[in-house]
Image (cartoon, rainbow, N blue to C red; front, side):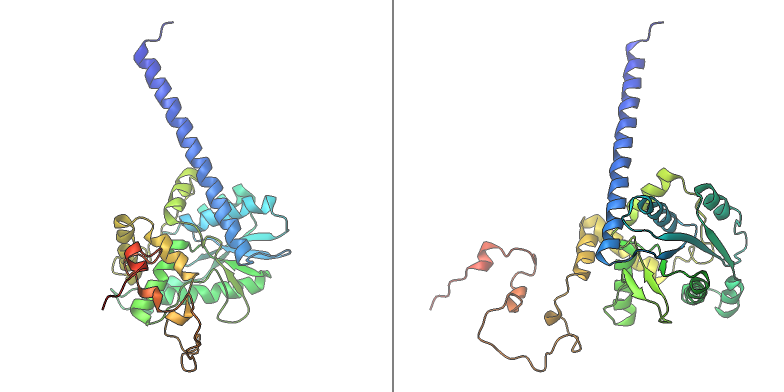
Length: 309
């Protein structure tokens, strides 16, 4: 059977496209596993013998977190358990069978906690007002209790790099605080350690990974549709910055771990009241403001200034 040239060209193009797609997915997989592993190491998130409660909402982020942790568990030099936990908040139309079916297919131990927080939120929050604040407080308290009942030593949440940056701006704009979303913390009740293994991961990478892995995504109809949320607006602002100046989110995120306390204004972190001139040069002096446009290497013109009388 003869195959004409156009058909051969199409077949070759399809084969090349498939190889390129496979190569990109392989790169993405390596990057995600490296970033999660690095975050776990940098902040000592998971220790030998830990029982990690992985909070699974049914969204792309928590699915990806569980998926990557399962893979890392197989090759980690330490032993730790994973148990997936979902809080069924009794939202109308919530597909109760999806998560259990998925978790059984992966062989993951799991617990479904049923609590009707939906009715509470709808009863307490006036129509048209945002529900996230109350919903998250109720959910947090329930998850802390469940962690104790299950004997979990760590609670893993699926917040990623973009969530962390957005939270910092929310706290700045609406709370007047330089406060973010730390990769690891002790919970409000003082009884639990909360970790965020996706701290170094970019949201677009999670979108691609979820599509590749074909996770059975469950949308949150309670709060996800509220377009007037401050978080939604701040996130849109940050994404617009990223479009205009690629790399800006990475720079902001890196800055959150590179704080110069002497150039902020928190008197509890730096002894402004007692500092005095020492007669010795310091790299963190007022030279930090010489080049406002680029805080990296000052331009030659800014480095050498000749004063003439």
